[in-house]
Image (cartoon, rainbow, N blue to C red; front, side, top):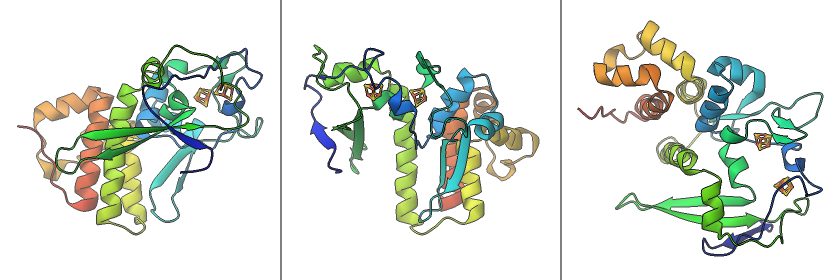
Length: 247
Ligand code: SF4
Ligand code: SF4
């Protein structure tokens, strides 16, 4: 664990307060190097009423991890503001309701382990004590658990844990670097959901799979269902794990 990370229990008081009264207000949004998960992108582009390609092109940059070959999607640095997030405003975050999981979680970090027998997830938290952040030391009645509840993280955690499962599988089954076309499929099905949907419904991408109509109807209009479908499809096309349609 890095030196500035201190393990913390859920029943500990969260003596931290972020707000405009802090001299550092917005500083953490002005010096970014922030990877976005597929669910972060889904929520952000939906809140901005943008298609996935337009959002990804306008606000993100893409590179493939040098060792894993996995696509890494980050906020695109703005040449006018250096590394500032495109959504930071003097009054705060302009996409607050749909901000990414890492923004919700800061100054905490979350790690999980999953039981191989039961599938049950155990969570661990640490405080990231960075000197530039002046929110520490404020008195609070909220425990870490209560503070986390206020950040509305459940949906993000559930979706991001599924991504971590997929990455864990990749590391076990395909430990080296993904080939370019494998990385392209990962990016298509998890980040570029509108294009994934177009290829499914207009270009017969799933022709060989005999996907039931009920499933197709669900993923036609529901982004979360399409993302879950994409996670299963990536496991199928990359690792040969059969898709299960629940019928
Ligand atoms: S999305 Fe909002 S909270 Fe997150 S870095 Fe950007 S402005 Fe800050
Ligand atoms: S640096 Fe810390 S206190 Fe300051 S705005 Fe960011 S999270 Fe809030």
